[in-house]
Length: 162
Image 1 (spheres, rainbow, N blue to C red):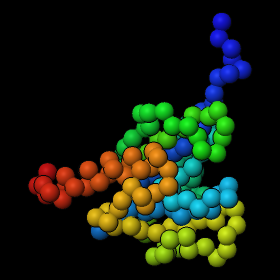
Image 2: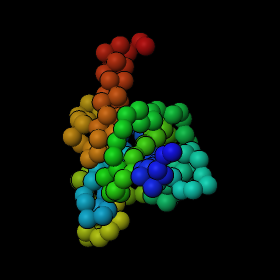
Image 3: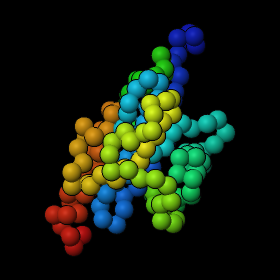
């Protein structure tokens, strides 16, 4: 019989990939749990909501405006230990999305453009896809997603008729 006390738990995160019409991707610079991090906008799935509901809620919380989900992009396909929780496995779900209106929140051109370094500080910035590298994001699954996005972008740039 399995010992249920030794089973790990899951942390599920849902992120949005926003690419504007000039091939820039929106990144979120944050200070959380004593750590500076760059990631995609989004956050943790709460009990009772689906991944799409989560991302819509996170968009309202982070941007103060709604988004439209376009399509599912990726769900973690490998084991990733959660960084901030002992004995937890991380599963991340990514959706391509777009703003319904022109972004009405502050977008910086400088990484970590916070007024002060307090828990929950957050700033957004656009990054040109042609200059995006996996080192531009902090977490392993995000790095994997960056490589997928770059592959997609390079195919489109190399074959504009596709």
